[in-house]
Length: 402
Image (cartoon, rainbow, N blue to C red; front, side, top):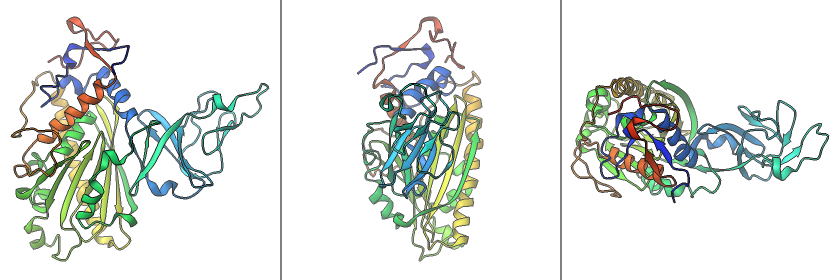
């Protein structure tokens, strides 16, 4: 149902459901578009919060974010998982920082204390009675999926709706994810809109040009594409040259790669090799033209140190190549010289599963991603567009009015 207060945007931000091959360039720089995406997408979806192991034991906690909202996730003494807005209801201070163990959450400003379920326990020093129901931390949703921890708004759909049938598909690669643990974590700052970064990830039309080593490692001639309601996946076996060059052995446990984008900003990947490896890449939008990507590598206990280092550093190199091209794209999109180009694909049909594409050279997943974007932005709101290029919201015209 449309919101009773429609969002008024610049005319250059028009989204047509019938023509979503390439978004107008203003969607990659306009503050009004960025704010709308934060409200209607990021704050209303499951967001990766880190390793599930950070809150696997009673009395553990971890602080994280749900979009711009500070969040704290806890596991109480009975082993139940909780998530709450990490904002003291007295004067608005952030309550918990970092991660660790505690039996209560105490605000560092005036000492108000909350239970691990967010219930106000002790409004320290107040001369008047304070109702815990009114001043407890706002509840949110938290869940685990494999080795990952996710947070979301209260009442979120079951997370399996976003990931099925991926667990079975991941196990088909030979991966045993039941004993995976975090080994490496790193982050990157990218001067580009979060959608530029995501779109780069979900197509491999660019791989032969941007990632020459990757094209030697994964066989692009037999690349395939898979779709779910909320994800796009790329899959491909190891390139024969990878065995010849010593990257891989014929007896390796994992010989097929799988690279998945899950709506809206989470990515998982499994690389061929003897290591049981699963990487999580979380794309965090900071501003209309700045993104932070958080990469975390998970490995099994029997993974060799050398193999773990090889896969970690190989992926790091590929990402740095991606970030460079993403920043070049962002500069071009906001230059005023760009008009929507063409997408490389044959025929888009939503909802297809296990579809063999043309040797990885399709950009068809972009259309799937853009349709999810359109659906999310119009699910609750009516988007109206101002006259004469005026946004009507105080942000002014878009960076590129094309």
